[in-house]
Structure formats: C-alpha cells, structure tokens
Image (tube, rainbow over the protein chains, first blue to last red):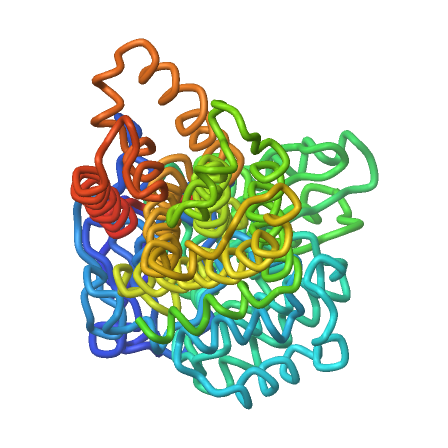
Length: 323
Length: 256
C-alpha cells in the first residue's frame, strides 16, 4: 500500500514506511477546520506526525500552517474536527502541553528583560527549575549573553532564545514555526544541525516553513499544505519518487535534435525539444535510445538522467503554488 | 495561580515599572496634597483651612487626586495586560500555563497587589508631606489623628479599593482592545471627559457611572453618590468587569 497521499482526503501513512503512525503518532487530526467569517483558513485537515521524526510542514504563505499549529497548541479553537497530541484531545491542551515546546510566529519576549529573566518568567510559570534555564541557554549557545537585554539581541540570537524557551519543558514534541526566518546561511545550517540533534535525542520535531528547500535536507517526513488543505504527507523520498526521472540528451547539431525526438517517439515515449536538448519522459530508455539514434546516423554528445527536484515535485502536487 | 503570580513579578520588578509606577503615584499624591494646601484659604472657597483642619481633612486632600489615581491605576493594569498581546508574549505564556483562568487570575492579582502597594506607599508619603506642610497655611492636623484617626485610616482603604476597581476596568479595556495605547486612551477618555460630560448634562446619571462611584469611594461619599451606594454599586460594577475580563481571556482565540 502506498504511503504517499496526493489528495485532499488522504489515506493514512502505514507502518511499512518505517513509522507505525497508527500506533504512535505524536500528532493526529481528523477533519480539522478553522473558519474566520466565510474564509476557511484550514479545511478538513487529516494530519499525522510520526513520533521520533523531523516532520516538515510546508506550504506557501497563507496556506494555513500557523493556524493549524495554533489549534494544536490550544491557542485557537477549531471550528470543526478533532485532534490529538500524544493521545490527548486538543480541547484539553493542559494534558499534553507540559510535554510540548513551541516557537510560534517568531520569538516574542519582553524587550526590557534579559534573556535569562525572560526564560525565568516562563520557567516559573511552567514550574521548571532555574537550573533548566541555564541548561537551555547552554544548548542554544547563549549562555555568555544571557544577561543582556532581549532588545539588544540580533535576529539570530532572538531565534535561538525562542528555541531555548521551547526547550524548557524537555519536550517530547517540539513545534517550530519558521525557525530560520531571517537567519543567515550559517544560522540556517546551525538550526538544521540542532533539529537533527533533537531528533537523535528522541524528540519529535514538527517544523513549518514556506521554503521547501529549507527542510529538504533535514526532514524525514513531509506534510504539504495549500489553501488550507493537505496535498501530501509522507516521506520525502516518496514525494520525489512519485515523479519518474527524465532523460536529457543532446546531439551534434540542431537538426540532430529533431531526429532524436522522432526516434524516441517511435520507441513509444514522449519527447520534446527544449532549448539545445531533447527531454524524454522516461530515463530507462537511455540504452535503447542510444542504439536507435546511432542506427539513424546521429551521435549523442550528451546523455543525462534528470531527477525531479523537491520543488518540482511540490509544484506538481500543488498545481503550481510556490513554496 | 501562584506560579502565574510569581511569574508576573519578574516583569513588575523591572526598575522602569517598579520605580516609574511607584514614583509617579507618589508624585501625583504629593502634588494633590501640596496644591490643596497652597490653594486653601480662610474664606468661603471650595477648599478652606477650616475644612481641611477637620477629621476628614486628609480625605478631602486625597479626593483631589482621585481622577489622576484612576487614570494611573487603570493605565498600569491596562498596559501590563495589553502588552502581552502587542508583544506576542501571550502565546508563550499560554504554552506554559494553558489553564487560562489561572494565568489571568495570577497576572491580575500580581498587578493589583503592586497597585495597592504603590497606593499605600504614596499615601503614607503624602500624609507625611501634608503633616509637614499644613501648618504653613494654618491648617491643624491634630483632628486627623485624634478623633479622626479612623477616618484618616479609612482613606487608605478607600484609595486601595478605588485603585483596584480602576485597575480591573483597565484589564477589561486591555482585553477588549488588545493594545496598550488604545486601552489607556479609552480609559482616560471615559474617566475624564465622557463621565464628566454625562454627569453635567444629566446630573442623575452620575449616580450610575462607574468612574463616579469609584471617585465617591475615595472621598468617602460625595454630592453625586453616598458612600454606601458608591461602594455597593461600584464594587458590583467592578465584579462584572472582572467576570467579563475573565470570560474574554478564557474564550478568545489567541491569533496575534
């Protein structure tokens, strides 16, 4: 059974993909919907986040990512549908939030308090020790600047402090909304490394982004959302695997390109001349094509298998919306 | 709720909040005392030396500061509550205390305790200044501490009750507007021009206005409302405002 889902009403991913999501889903929703006035921001979302995975939650701006996260965290009430986090209903967030850390819509702290004081506000409220504050400051490498006022922090430091706040409860589930927003390349690489480290420590990481490439190298599991509806959820490999690799070939002259395309079509494949190449819809035809065009008196100067990028796969799934 | 209370104190303990708020309160109270003493005369004016020398003389001085106290108390609580929305910090607070009524109760209580403490300190210092400055205008303060000691002490209690009342109205405005500036502007507009205009246009309506009741409590009763009426109606209105605030805080989506 395929675990990949490309419809608005997807079958749930199954155990053979490596995550026994029916048994151990960290997050699961059924028909989750949020309506503001007449606008459906989140539309019948059936979401599954497997435990122990880094799950990327990707969609264009305004796709419904943040609203979905807010409903999971008890900040916004669903209009319809249900959801569970670690088996507890999202209508009772007090049952699971002690095991959840989150950074939603950027780091928000008190500008005139130091980083340490800001974390102490949250630690006191959550019943965590002062020692835990120092531990999380150490994890995000802010210990040396912990006494500085939040307003003096760079954007990257603010993001790290946001992650530190999310780590206060030693969470089993970490929810991060666009954690690399505004970070420089070095900061993005460090964030990715941090996410992998959390996953390796046994955390489930649910991280949203409007940039698919940002999660391509780090996510084990992907959820694509567009227009408030889930378009895909499954492993990244399955999103890529849903599109066959194509073959890109070139000849010695422009006239050769037409010959190559004609030969490929005779072999039963779709072939198009694109710029100085011929694109053929199936890479497995490579050897057969090479022999056939040689018989037709044409020598190939270039032959390459082209695999779909994640962006292309996303565009295919969403019908063109950019992420 | 105690965790929310202690957590809120980290914010209240900021020097800018603690000293700025307390300092302003002290300044308002002293200004009221000094201006009242300076303006006191021996004739038939609104503020006479003879009147201020009576047992309720200190109460009369403090009633001059009632509008300022109301604005200040409302502003302190309104800013403290509304900033959580405008800073976006409410999201993080609710992550750590999802039981919203406990969070609301702890935050409100911490701010009201700070407010009450500031009022008491400001009143004590104002009383000290009044005792020192009053003789310069021939005002005798002996009645304040003799037969009028109970009246003088009750002024402290009335000021705290009124400050807490104004503070709770500030919390309601903060939750309605979710931004500090509009909350404070709405509160100031209501306490100063709106209520005064309404009371001037229809004298009887002052009997039913919340700000007028809290002002009457500070004065121990005035021409608009007697003390008992003001206390009963004022506290009832404050209770309704507190319940409305709690309901809003508990039920409303946090989409900011």
